[in-house]
Image (cartoon, rainbow, N blue to C red; front, side, top):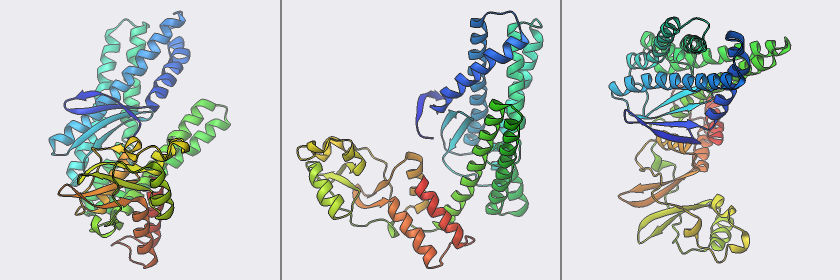
Length: 390
């Protein structure tokens, strides 16, 4: 997930915070400080309520982190590459380097998250009952027990992108032997549940519960969008099935030297030749890439006297081999927010892949009625639309 702050590593796994996490902590702390704790333990000071709210919000995200660590550690024990864990406004996400190779692995990785949350709920409940009743500390642990129980149960809802959706996918996959059908079933189930939450949220809004209704509808919108994105990703992978990068990349991109002026880059390469990016090569080595977006950050009167080396994104860059499947490059571009990728073989630039190249490929498949196996032309068009958005 982009726009994240790296916190460190746990068990060799990078831990990051998405910027929306800060908003979530403030919102949860505020709601607890002005609502939950004053109702449960009246008579305390405003500062105490805020301290309890902040501690509870932070402990909630520690719980989410443990939930995601459960996924990641089980995945790694099964041989998956685990890239990182990112905490964001709706909880967390474990970024795995590959899809589950079997229904069994999918089930094990998915189910451990809710199990961790339910175990934490039980632990916090025991701590709560070991503390003096009606105390602030008991109220804190009672909240943590309840919210972990809610997190565990909610994640068992059988619809993507929730863990229950992955459990459903594994069960359908195991029963039918068809991971594609399993993904479609779990994604549609997730969209259906998302729409139920949206409708429920609007009903709560109309009944006067503005904050609760808006939050419920927002969660439903997120679920619906994530489930739909999962289906589009499936269509995209099928559209690129067996297609090597070398077949759609630009095999002879213009390579520029680092002393090229920004003025010449814009007027010669961008406006005349239609390039939006150029790999920068010195002494046969890729040293960076310059794009239109880089030039736009520079005042126009400085273009003639500024070289592209000043504004380019320097090496090391994200690169790909011409022998990989297009889906690998598309995933890398989406993950990194890139518009183009240099294609490298034996240390030399042999091509350049842009989003335009991918779009043209998908549009030609649609025009020629050559969808991948199991993918209708309309779905291929949706995959093209997905490329535009990533």
